[in-house]
Length: 478
Image 1 (spheres, helix red, strand yellow):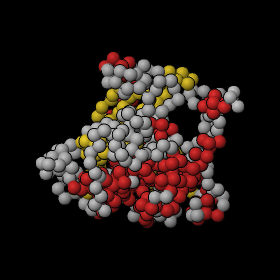
Image 2 (tube, one colour):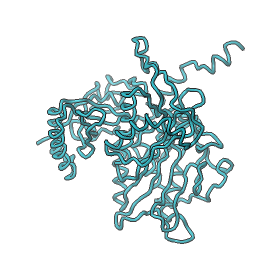
Image 3 (cartoon, one colour):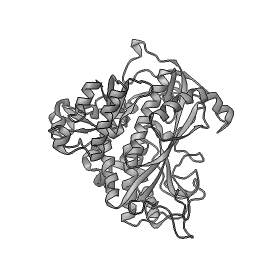
Image 4 (cartoon, helix red, strand yellow):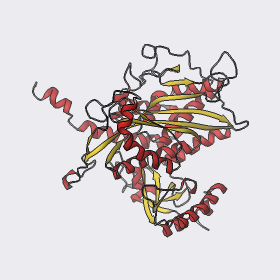
């Protein structure tokens, strides 16, 4: 029996998808297939196999070192992997041992920008068939399944901002290498400031058209391509999808955009606030609702003419607010992302909600008998691991439902309403998560301690660096 058969890892749908995958590989004469998994940061890692070898690995899995789960955002290993338990207290991860990437055939794509290459997303397992506990896709799947047990499906639509620049110098001299390496030099595609102006869009259209065509060819549910307020800033929005699909789409979208852009002489970045003159911060707004499995109706939709959210939706909303501070590590996982939370901007700075108000954290859209009723969480940054972002939403929302929490009144003046402030820094957010008993129970102490350790390693590296601000402030004065 194969590894997949022995441990019962595939559904009937996945088995059928595996047959279609093999047929597509033969029909398109694919030469290579990339096997990828999303790491702790939501970055795709994996191996590229010759097509015949990849097909042979579909049910047997492909080995990958567990030390990839021990790295911070500089790709430095921050756990002592050669000690007992590998620094995780887990025997299977000792000595940078292997885990197995097991493809999910339903995610298979032919890459438009590399037409002889296929791509498939994988889940990671130990050799004994147990899921690796730090697999964020598995954590999200667990949250989605908990919703299913209650009779609901999670629905999410993506609204993602990012910057697209002309690549002037990739800085590929040997001396530019490092962890991390020297960032590229870029120039603008537009001056910005003219939000949704057709003239500005026309300036960037030649570049975004390249992205648009390949993103659609990938089968991602693209809805719109927009020019944002800042210089060289744009936004792609995607139709709502159910279950794991929105998160899977997000990891593929980010990776695809960066690869496509680079091949055509551009640099795309999902960094929240690049250190470039006059640029604006980028956000990732997550539109979410629940659909009843019993009748297929939007469970957030109000049927009472005096309300614009169902009782379930109000409780779910209250849960998002109650756990907002601790969940920011998942929605805004970088040091840079906290520079976006500023008063009197189009970003939130406190845990509040409002009806169709762009200054709040949770913007409520829809109304009585409106099947498009949803909650738009405006807290996230585009670098967030989508599995952790969405899982944190589901878990927080369900806690609000279980405890019948009340979200209070709509905040019509979002920057004047009294409410819990969002963390001002990643360190503050990490403290909020570390001490939060809810997420420790919901995601498990093992995962929380692991994730906090990685984030603290990034913070410590940041604090060890002397910034330009410190040099200007103190070097001459003292």
